View (tube, rainbow, N blue to C red):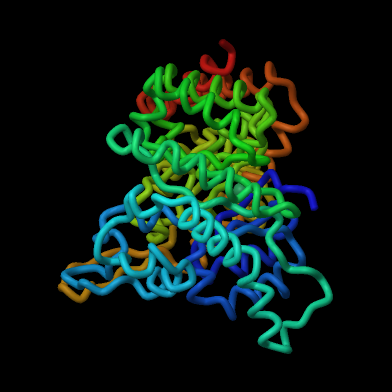
Length: 430
Ligand SMILES: [Zn+2]
């Protein structure tokens, strides 16, 4: 089975509807292990049914057990571990299970080869078999197709400047052991690091050496909180050069939580990009696995998410009165065409919200489900177009498009908001 290039990260169950309906617009789905453990019946049913044999994989999320327990406890003063993480810890066994919610795991917890091997086997066993086991227990999900993940992700722990020297070797060992154990399904490693670690020139050089030599087929790269839209030109160049060099050494690199800059890097050696449905083009490592941000309107020519109000302002400021103006200057995807129809004012459907009162008495606004649905469909249509555009155009044309868009939009949004387009172009043109 081919390993997908355009991945959607499954974030919440209502997303199933979109993933089914829009299944031509992406290649594969990546699930969080804690959700699979907790909702295995629903997810197995989804994978064998609506997902319709699309490739998938499971992020084992082992890093969750390396952070302070406060990130995996229920909110507030509770000392109880979130139920999905608790169940996952039981699948993973020792040393995870007895320490979950009590203390973060440490390298000393894996101080024998036996411990490390058993740990890797249990994690891989979970990823590989959880869905098929669920299917065989429930006759109604029986399927003739094999429902195993298209790749296995080795266990991994987050590294920052402070714990790097402790975890460095162990993270590499986990990948090498996993690769030795699993001979059939491709094994990927995960390189999950803080921004400070990644952008330290000496340490990044070491990462490059380490992950070039490690024995896996590919690597998921996650630079925590790295926001391509706010990054400096030098950070963008370092990110780009890292991808070029590591891919030159034969590794398939998939960016977790990547935006359009990462998609462009497909032209420079990056293998794939993962993002959420309408969000999740960057994120921090904590809170683990949870939290869904508001779906914004993706402004295609800015390759970024904007508040509904900002787009409404631009429509007025630029005097784009007719639907034709809207389709030419903002978006002409099928969703926008249907929504706008023959009146630009219909754009308000993307911003419709309701107000409510929280339990503590404070009022808040929330998106209507219609607005969320429209924003999500429009988002995925445009992400698909971005992949297409990158596939069918030269580097020069891609860079030119960024510069054109910057020049056109800076007068509405200001350089402080859209200057990343120029930054991206400069970093790519180097
Ligand atoms: Zn659209």
